[in-house]
Length: 211
Length: 78
Image (cartoon, rainbow over the protein chains, first blue to last red):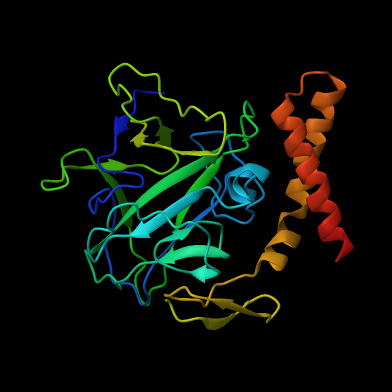
């Protein structure tokens, strides 16, 4: 696995330009950002999500059994500071914790041909997460969309530039993946890790994409 | 304060209250999703039981195994 590159602004930060999905043809409804178990070995991924049984979705006693992943649609603007939702909302909400089609985010727009949606993503890990357990956090981010006519081609990207002047680098699903890391990670040298706290929870301060 | 609305599980038809917004047409309630998760819970528990037998299980994994046992019992009781 190659050295990951930092996704600018990713996590519980007031950043609009973090992750982008471009649709080659028009959609018929607003797309949804979901997360599911991944039963494959990274970087391989399941074709589609079906279960949310892993600890990243069930949570632990240490976080009152909450899904650990959270996301916000930023297509319409920056999410504001400290946008992480304290708890999951049933169904769709923006922002929301992510757990299959039980808790997810609907984008605020229905993209036309060539249009893109933007979102931000983070993880909050409790002190009692069952590490080292290689698969307890294995998940995939999925976008659910509908269309009439030609199926769109999707291009996923992350921002390596600045919030003001984004520089989008393409993400290839099944080849690249997300690393949830500590704040002040050295992206040139590593290590690329998230350290669990002695008590309570910790948010990944920075996210990177494997290249 | 956000307005509370009622949404419907597409699997069982149960009504659930939420303060969320967006498209609820694909919503599946916790109970229905837990039934789908059940085989995955059992498979993971089996892994921890094998680790316990081999004496390679960690404290946090023991905690997770207990969590899974409770979760499985709760789903099967319903």
